[in-house]
Length: 410
Image (tube, rainbow, N blue to C red; front, side, top):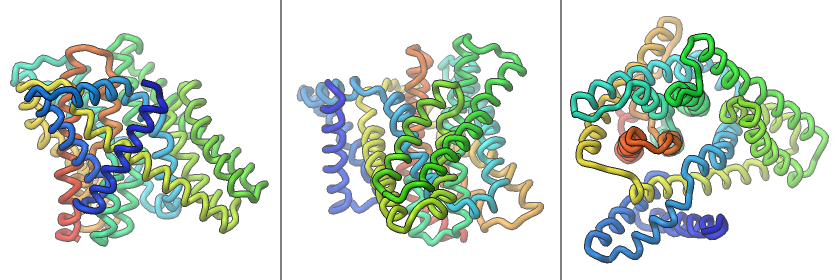
């Protein structure tokens, strides 16, 4: 199946599910789309069990023709991160810089090792063997958070602006940091990276620090070009080139594409919008990137819901997945609680900040994509199934209850 047909089917299905959700179900868009997709997937599986498996087979063929990891990590992610960074106020971000940087670095590393250790001993207890390095890989891919499903709910619950900034800022940067940690651990697991402190530290610096520097460089060049143009079609095209060309070039020179795109997005979204664009250009740019963000997120959450058709599940793995849900949440609570408790000695925080950041730390497409990028093996099957179960719980249960939690503690 060619890419045009695949895109046509996904856009059509996303549009249909969006209509159903808007008219009848009325859930937050991301959660509603994923739930409808999940229900459709389960109905197709049930039809297959009853002997009506033609639709299920066709759906499997479609999903098998889509490389979820390639689609998200080398396609959608650059657009989603840029669109998210474009609308974050740099002054607000600067006020929360220590919180966001600690959550996106210390928090990710703490979560990776906590979840990895817990997973290793739990799976061993349940009779499912997984090498410790693969447990750490699972810890790194389940640690990044996805704010898409929760930010709209926080706004409707009248959550403080500082809290929204923390959640959005953390997620933008922890995606990039988690991907770097995942790449390092995967290299160790497959033997392509030396497991020495010096080599790992050098690789981390190349990816993370290199990503920041490269993102600033391409953002600055684009900003200088935007200053010389007053035509919104050209300006939007320049931002598209920045996202697509910048992400591809970052990957080619082995720096972090996600971090580079976030840094460039922050520069264009603040300096670029205020000093290099007219009001007309700003309006068109915002509308364009909001539409890109909405469309890609709709497709992404539909894909997450449909992926259940091709995921490997066994009774033992399902039991392990359900047992890990509260344990991963506990690890999130600790990895958020430690840096915030230390920072509380010097600054004020929103009441219930640790609880809200813990429960509002939804897992999303990045976790699924990283799990699916693992080399084919028995370990991959276990990790993919556990990751998917936790992501579904996170989006549905945490996403639908975070609003009430915010209202009860703020």
